[in-house]
Image: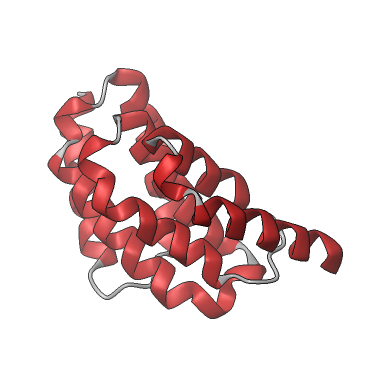
Length: 144
């Protein structure tokens, strides 16, 4: 319902005002949590992703996977359709970062990342397919 979308927009707007107070894990979990809900202001989700991007080097592997899952889930959510280009390009950049740090992921995190990569098939960024294929190859090599 529309009242839920307005509520989520107000809540995310408030969180963005205090984003510097959020831990990396907190930002990732917030993005993952709101990615599948109705949103009256979908541009706030993009702002949340962009807030996280400069801090990626501080994210633990589980938080990186959660943030990527949030972006991929948002791309499947009709509420975020008008922002799909921005979400896709940001998610592709996030995926590139994950690839650089694949060695930091433990076995369980790698399995989780494999499931997230499946969701990433919805990315529409020009280089996304190549990045996803590279990620799957690296992940396969690391898991075997």
